[in-house]
Picture 1 (cartoon, rainbow, N blue to C red):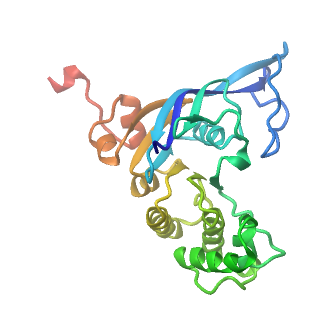
Picture 2 (picture 1 turned 90 degrees about the horizontal axis):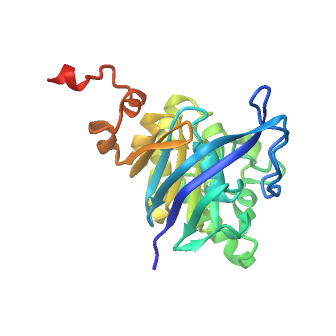
Picture 3 (picture 1 turned 60 degrees about the vertical axis):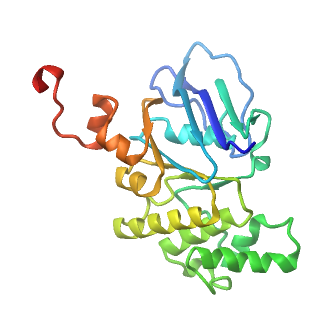
Length: 274
């Protein structure tokens, strides 16, 4: 049975310095997470994600919306396998992912920086995750996904000749080329100017829906979340405040906190409305 992604009561915690609250030391490398250890006297635990539960159905795009420090990126990293869960479960089609390493989850990852390899051309960048395909098939896949993101004929271009928007399209093509079963997008458009960001939101939505690829999209931009996602999850201080369609959130915010975050200028008490 295909059910997609399920997050159940997820908790993510970091060890922080008791003096200033900053994380103790640097975070681990992308594919390595240290084993849990006892918290020392000069340290404390910071809860970044606090019992969050949500689902992403096949083909659905869910946006994680919230201000900086709301836990949205930590939740995305936990789904990817880059952060360990202190408690809770993350499953795909009912199978627990706790012991599945990052590279075996078949999830595509896209971040704010395109992180393209400057010493190879666009085509080689897009083909980077296609090593399991026969060589004669890789070129066809590269051309297919480049055409999908609106960059036909760019395979031979140098990465250093790309604009910011073109570089992000190449990064999207590279993520989609291996046919991931889920895309994880951590504010991939936030470094671009407003006009370009709005155009690429449309491209991103069209590409994900054309390929039927479900996605979790992290953003602090309400307009971006509402334009792209089928459902939006509003987070604050690690807690899930509300999840629903853009229309549901806008017309029926579940709390004053959600309403104020969405930009409501006037909030009436029951007494005021009487």
